[in-house]
Structures are given as C-alpha cells and as structure tokens.
Image (cartoon, rainbow, N blue to C red; front, side, top):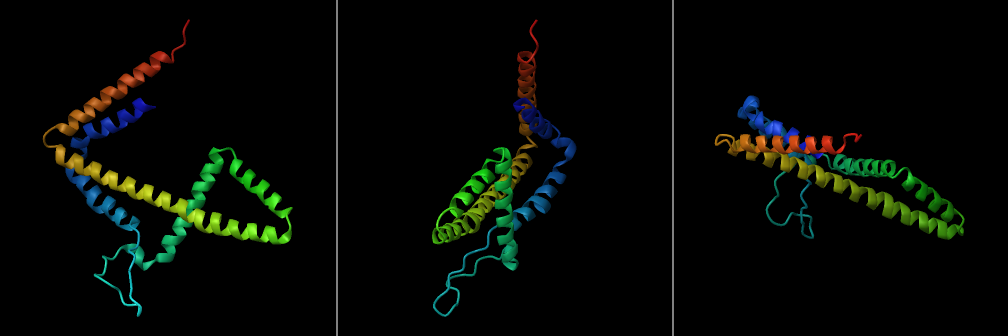
Length: 188
C-alpha cells in the first residue's frame, strides 16, 4: 500500500510537464484558494459597552454571511464522524449509549432528568460541535497543504527538482511493491 502511495505521488510529479504549469496555477488560484477562503472561521469582534467594535474591522470571510450554515456544518460533520467511528468500532458506541440510557432510566426520575440534561449539553451540544471543529480544522489544513504542494511544484519545476523527486518516489514505490510481492509469494 505504501508503495502505491509513493507511485501515485511520484507519477503526479513526473507528469507535471504534461499537465502544464499554467493548469496547476489555475487549480491553485481558482479552486484551492477559493475553497480555503470558504473554510476560514468567522472573526471574533470585540465590542464596548455600547456594542461598537473596538479596534480595526477584521477582513470579511464568506462565512460571515451565513453563520447558521457554518454552525450546522459543524454539527453535521461531528455527527458524521461519530457515525464513522461507530461503524469502525463495530457498533460499540451506540451499544454503550443504549446501555447507559437504560441504566439512567432505572434511576430515580430526578437523577434521570439531570443525567439527560448533562448528556444533551455535554455530548450533543458541545461534543458534536467540537468533533465538527476537528473535521473543519483537518479540512482546512489539508487544503493549505495542497496549496503549499502546488506552490512547491510551481517554484521547483523549471530547475528539474520536481521531476527528480517524482522519479525517486516512483523508484521507491516500485521497490516497495516488489518487496511486498516477493514477501507475499507462496513458498513451496
């Protein structure tokens, strides 16, 4: 698997000449930077007692127009991450939730109400938001790294560095695949 990853990245770097630098620059400027601007969090504005902003106004980001959408995506991403984790763990998360719910319902009514309120506030309101923020930060970082990768390719293609790195990654990938094939063969 590792060999295949090296092969894919190496082939991409070697094929930069065929892709053309202009197309990579368009990808960076029109797609990646635009997506990055949509992943930026809204700015916090500090105000005085009368509600007037203190200090210079921060630059506007697209999410300023739709804060409810930004919040909704965080909860949705958090729920998706919990669902993926539950599936990866073979359904253990929802089984734990079910057992904990049955236990809470077997308690006195006022204990069950307090536990229910704590669950809603800590797990649903706060927990899903924080998991969604984790997904948000990972997506933002992945887009920034992609932009940096395209910048690196743009800066180092004319002197041949990108082609050499691509060739070396292809070579490493093929060697790893050859080793994997050799070690995975059936022995007679």
